[in-house]
Image (cartoon, rainbow, N blue to C red):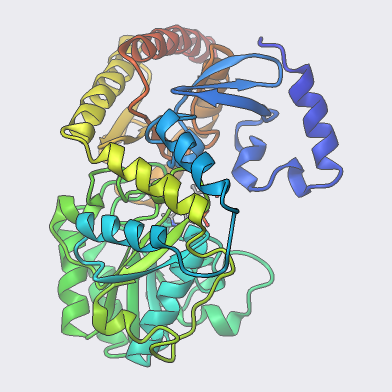
Length: 436
Ligand code: KE4
């Protein structure tokens, strides 16, 4: 067991004034039946908690830290910018510079707007799609998360083609009745919903590689069919690449699948760990955004100079030759090493990985296609594995419904240490399972 008195004390104290003691639910470690570790600092692939425990970090702030923590160039760029003030609420050159850098990698984003979170980006993208099509209905997919937007916090209704129901109290049914929540990777569901609601659907929003039901990869036919059906019914296709943007490839999932969405949302890496979201797409749509057009969008800190500078430096570094090729190569060694260790102890274990993003599943089913498949995995074994690995200094996502992330700072030594820790954990797991 690792020392955790200081984290425990901090958690008790924070819980008195912050709901769940955290500012975002997944950080509370409730899904793994454990107490959260409070972090003091990070450097490269490592984070250190209040009890001076060191962890190899495979969360990376849920994606942004693709270069690792406290990258010198990123830090220096922020320090330089904030000396001239932290915010003006007026345009700066940095916003245009970041926008041009994004467009270079995401040519479908002919014009774009900065926000301060991924949630703001997807919320604005939905409003834009509804505004330009003058339609209310939207399609999303079960297991995809697009931020805490009222019209997107919707789970599937009784039948997948029926209206959605709120997945949180506080969201009017009158709003969620416009949202259809369909099965990921299910072409029939999608086709039926379009046929039944022909010309009423403003947009389809999708995580083009899902990372919020663990890491689930779309079937190529499915993801291409969405584009075809949106064209046929004049609906907009929104790729929510908040997580996959600059993560699975420099140009995100749209580069991998060679699909041009009408609108793309970005976040996480694009701010280098500072609060940034982006929504952008075809000029004819974006020019309908205020003040050029009537569709409203605004934000006090949108395009914040320090955040822009962090994003610019991060993208400049990840744009170097073979950055993503090397990232995926390193990740493949990790994932295949975990798989080999699990197989050695007959632990049902499957892996998915793309670019610098990964997932693992405790199940016999080797082709995880949708939320139901993830739900059927063995969460109990996941919890035991997570806590064993945390105790060994390996910091995986504290939920079997989250993806993991690797950075360019992770070394082969870190990878081998992780595989060794996993082998020890699988051995303990196998003894536990055999003793039942
Ligand atoms: P934010 O509002 O958290 O910046 O972005 C929302 C969002 C939108 N779209 C996708 C595809 C996302 O993954 C996210 C946020 N991802 C979660 C990770 N599961 C953030 C972590 C958290 O909520 O604490």
